[in-house]
Image (cartoon, rainbow, N blue to C red; front, top):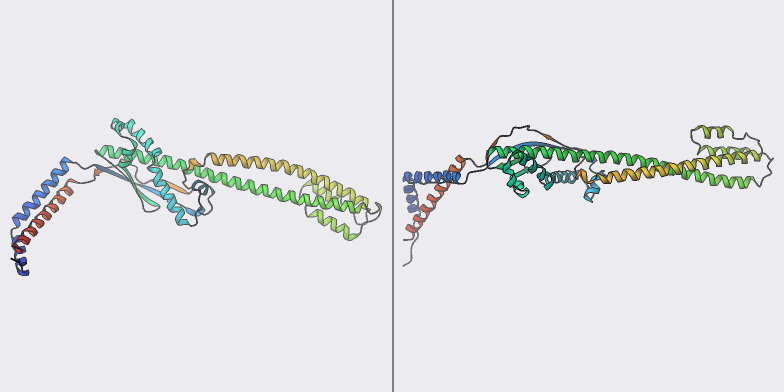
Length: 356
């Protein structure tokens, strides 16, 4: 025989009748609360301590940072990528084996309980939350308030110490970069000066060859006189040796032999300066090489953190640890589950009646 579903008014009556049996509802809620309380005592909640860390970044060098480009083997095309990479790198570092091994070593000195804890377990205990530069939240969980507070306290100290050391190394890298840049600019200036002197020396050699074709006692024309003076004035430096040579420049009407003699003195001065430039370039190249070696030797010590990054504690402690899951919350969850169980039973009973 085909069963007819219950009508709407019967369903309403059943629900109203069920809610009028409120003592039953109270029993389910109370039982659920008691079960939640029992669960919280059988499996007690861990304790959680938290502290805020100030993380600030000035990205003004984001697109001109040789150190980070070398560390990451990539170029940052915009400031947002630069900032996100910095925040991600710091997150990786604070939970790295290096930071956690130091944290664990200090915890073991304070409490023998931590002798049985290894780095992977400690990593599960500690956590860091952030959205961007600014306030970061560091948390730790343990089975007692004291251990949770100790873990957070020591971890925070390790993060500050190690991260600030890496930032100091990054700042040293920046100073070395500036020194290398200045040395390279000085080297470029010397190379430019060398090229100018070599070109002038070559021109003087040609001019002397041409003048040797003229009788030595013949006077030089005024146009040639000023042309030679202009050519030398363009490479003359403001130093005593060049000033003396310019003072000895032959007067208008002097014989060709005087100009040849003067040009030979100029060429000798140029050769002396070129030798000095050669020595200076060699010294600069050695200094640049030394600076580059120094830069490379501390590259990894910066750990990819920017020279403009800064970390500061916002909580100095002692830290207060609270239960991550309060007993009252367990009772509330249990009460809600008890109510849900009652509703499921009611639904089952109504359904059976509707099809019986």
